[in-house]
Image (cartoon, rainbow, N blue to C red; front, side, top):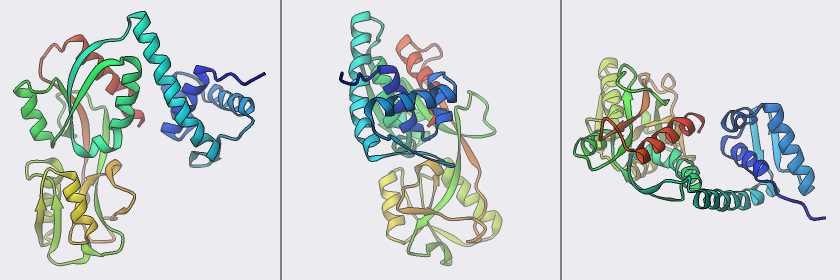
Length: 286
């Protein structure tokens, strides 16, 4: 008898693959960690293959686990799309969503993939820009909602997640040791730019903003060249760059920023509210 790939088991497996711990996966799917562990064991026994490497720091996928992941994502998307279409439970329409570049790289793939599974008839238009530009577009009703950065002291809307700002440099070029310090920063009105300059001013360390732009790819290119260091949210730091410990390089400590959802209307329509609720549910666990 051929193995049967149960949808619930696959959904649990994908959650584990995304979150890299059984505990966080259990929270996402609403089960206990023991139940999640049993589901993984059942899936491994069914396929007669090990799917996870377990360690004290979490889990990673085996070669067989990586192969299963691609199939699992495709099967879940088709399953959820069929249920939404035939039951009439899925929403329809076009959604204009804004997101800063650093959050787009770190979070958007999973956010969009999981929302599309629930509402396959929705087209999400993604607009990437720094937070001040996104807020301006919301005010002009050019976006329906946006994920924006805010200082911790701002309490206008619930904070979905907090992100540490960190100093980032090239692994092979000690740009942080140069005097004056060369910086690659976002636009002057963004939180990371203001935090870097305020911290360095307070510490009395000479610096020069060598590159300022709202383009994340441009900032990363300058840092990779070894000509400057940057300030990024920790989740957005690429694997080929390094976080520079502030104390080791005589750099000022940086604050954290909060992630909030902003709307163009005080009473958003159903589609916008559904996507916002999806952000509130998924983002904290990524």
